[in-house]
Length: 323
Image 1: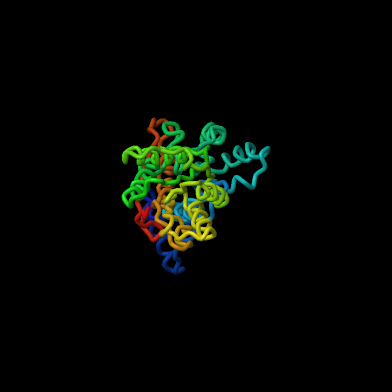
Image 2: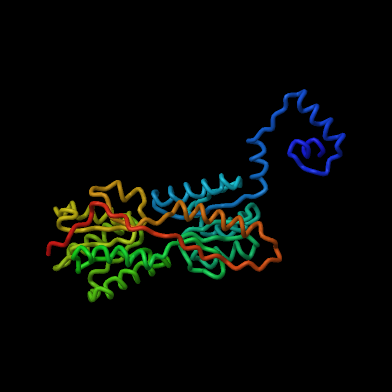
């Protein structure tokens, strides 16, 4: 349409036609609707963030980053909960979603499901994983170095004189859990501390599993002087159990977490933790996803394994070992 091409500054319009359109625009005092223009541009690309059963604080950071990235790129963002779909309808839902979006962002554990990832990739939908390199080489991912981050925070406890350090694992079905467990073992080995299986308790990244693990560790005949929980929700549960048992944190027990979500500052004392930039990871995932969507179909661009830096955040939940 000639009028649209003139208003939007496009070339290929005869000069006489351009002048007539501009005179009409001036006479009508026409001003482009920027909101409508942005919406029209956004309708050209729709992407989805699909999540399942995260903690509220982790989900908040995911949404903040994804909304920031999609707004900057002027694309539509569809946010969907996998948990709201029944097991029998999930495959059909994935297939239907694949007809509506050009790309999806998957946090754990969805990004570690071969069936879910294959459902999208086989339909030609670009996929970027957050906080996991489980399918690195097959799909792009944005993550931190979980193993190194875990080693860093355990090394911090060792530097405070702690040698009996309890550990609460994460969901055994997630790659990050295995990497954080390895980082825990790395730090102990580097300090010449023998690992004791009795000091490792299973967790599932939930507050309730943190309660159960903390009860187990603190009931040991020779309990740990410090506990590293592999996320902040479980670390918060450790603090709660310690208080109920009459223990002082950090005087009697030092506690550290992982993620630096809002949960880490909603307990007393506030938690020393590893800052995982979840919002930045989601934002970066948007950029990577859009590059993959917009690249030429014939191009053979390699997948991206993007590692963001983590940070040790020291707060009041750690003190020098007294034993």
